[in-house]
Image (tube, rainbow, N blue to C red; front, side):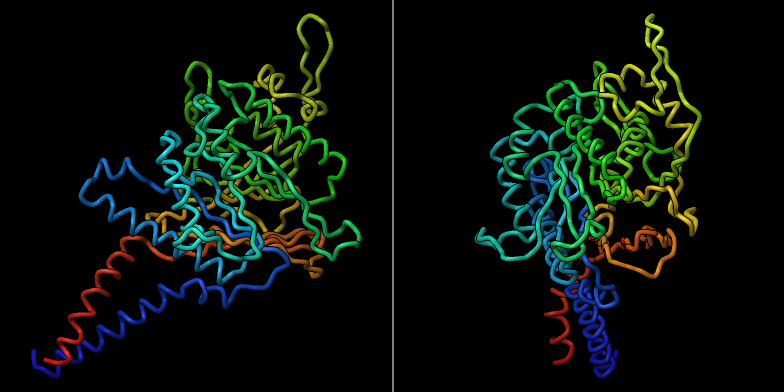
Length: 434
């Protein structure tokens, strides 16, 4: 290769490398240019699962390097997408850490790292200013499944991330106007909805859920968006995960989806417009169609009294749902059907859209989910348009709900770019001077 050819190759390499770096550092800003304005916005981050001492113990040579690169990778995602999209709410969808069994010292090390990663503090742990609110969902790697949760896991979670269950209202119109702009949002502790060894946790969760059901019965006109870590039950083939649940001593040891009975209660009694969750790292877009069915009477023991599942489900507590699980599941099968996002039709009446947010981990492309709500008076009915794992839903009440994935890129590509940039800093000048 001649000197002039070498220089041309070096210049071309520098230009390509420069363009790649420009995109890497500004990807969120570029993608935000084409993003529509909205009245309220959520940035959703799925299952970051930051690792720690266990990884270093497994990989003493490369473990610290991997943790460092991964922290900067996730930090870049949070900081870039928050700056570019300016959300009102920043929601991590559970599994902030990789293990619910981390000891106290390691747990608080990871909290400090996570606060820096999620753009809450600077390198000196000083709080960063911002108008957004941070929210969190409890995942199985935060407090464990129902069969293994201990009080200390719940206590340290709530002390650092807030309550396991809570709801709030947002008025998209100015304060003092009618309730037509009201939207309700609720975070539900999915880890204790099904069979839980320590009943105090399940009692607290179902007390919240039943209060929410009472509110929904009084104000069904207010749209509700639910956030819970574990997805609702659905047949195999719609998402990557399958409806698999393992038990130990009758309590949840592992579950991909919530039980069919719990899912039926949530869909019928809470009647959400949208459901967001994590857990399935591949992500998924699906919907649950709700239809009326014939009454499902259940004779209660020898009393002769009859329970109508169709009428009484929303007044049942979790003990009764457990007792009549078979009947509740049968009612759910008769009244609910799930479809994949690719099968959604343009008319979306009487349907609940469910988004499983793809993991923000590097192996899954460093995804951020951006969810928007806007006033939209152009729609005469309810219409749904799905594209990949994103969608636009126009409601008959005059609102547009939009979701899209914002992806940085696989962590291996980013690592190659990092190595190429370091090498290029030495090789390109040398080639030009040759």
